Length: 393
Image 1 (cartoon, one colour):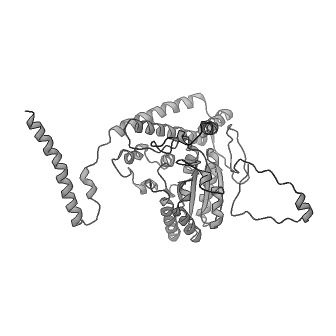
Image 2 (cartoon, rainbow, N blue to C red):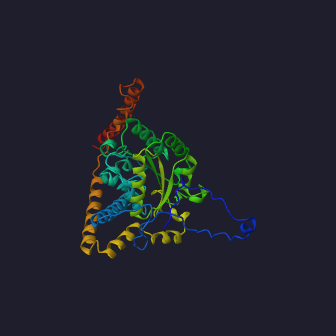
Image 3 (cartoon, rainbow, N blue to C red):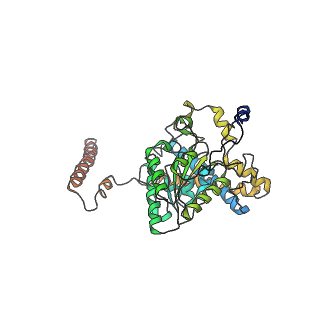
C-alpha cells in the first residue's frame, strides 16, 4: 500500500527526447484511492513503510471492544429516537474505526473539538455515553464538562469547530505546552469557509492541530464529487502543510496515522490534514432517508469493508481472541444498551425558567421583563387547568 504526502510531492521533469516522450504510453490510472492501510478488508495484516504499529493482543482486543460497544450504543440511540425518546440522532454506523483509531491515538492532555457524530471519540475520552443524549432529548445543551475530559461540547454549526480548534491550538503553542489539538469534521464541512480559514491560520501560525476529516462519501445527499475536484487530503498542499489519506475502516491504520500526526504537532512542526476514507452506512441523521439518493449496491460494497468484521477476522486468524471473549462482549453490549434505555427515559425535564438564568452574568432589565412575561404565560395554563377541574365538580 502507498501513501501520498502532499507536502512532499514534486513534479518530475522528463529527461528523454521529444520523440521518446511522444511514444510513451500513459500509465493506467487506478480507480481506487491511494491510502494508508495496515489491515485489509479480509483481516490480513499489511505493512507500510511510513506507518508501522505494534500492538499487543490485549490492545487489539481493546480496540475491538471499543468499536463493538460504540456501535451498540449508537444502535440503541437510533432506536430510542424512533421510539420518540430523542428528537434527533446522528449515527456513526460504519465510521467506528476512524473514530476509535484516532481517539486512542490521543494523550490525556490533548484537546478534542468534535462535530455532532463523534460518539466513538467521546467513548475514548471517557465521556459517559448517556451524557451524549441529553442534548438530543432536549434536556440540556450537552451533558458533560468539556475540561474534565478535554472533549469539547458537540458542535452543530457545520465547520465552526475547526476555527475553535485552531485558536485553541495557537494558545497551546503560546503557552509552550507540548500537547496537541484535534478537530473532527466531515467531507461536507470541508466546503465551508470556516474550514478554509482554519487551514490558513493553522499553517501561518504553525498551530499544533490535526484536522481529521471523516470522508464518509456523502454530505447528506451530496456526493463527494460534487464538493471537490481533487481528493480532500490534497487540499493541504495549497496551505503549506501535509495531508494523508488513510483507510477509515482500518482501525490500526487510523491509530498509526493519527498518532504520527499528533506527534508531529507536538514537535512544533505544525498542522496535518488526515482524510479518513470511510462510509456512512446509515442515514445522515434520523430525519434523513438515504434510499432517496444512494444505491443499495454501494452500501453492500462497503459492508464488505466493515471495520468491526475486519478486526474480528484478524483476531480469530491470529488466535488473539476466543469465543468466550466474543460472548462476554455480546453480554456487555446488551448491558450497555439496557442502561442507556433506562437512563434516557429517567432524564428529568429542565426547569423552563432556567433559560433566563445565565444570559448575562449580572442580570439585565430586559431579561427580567421577559422572565416575568414567561412566568405569567406558564401560570395561565395552571389557571386553566384548575378552572376546568372546578367545573367538573
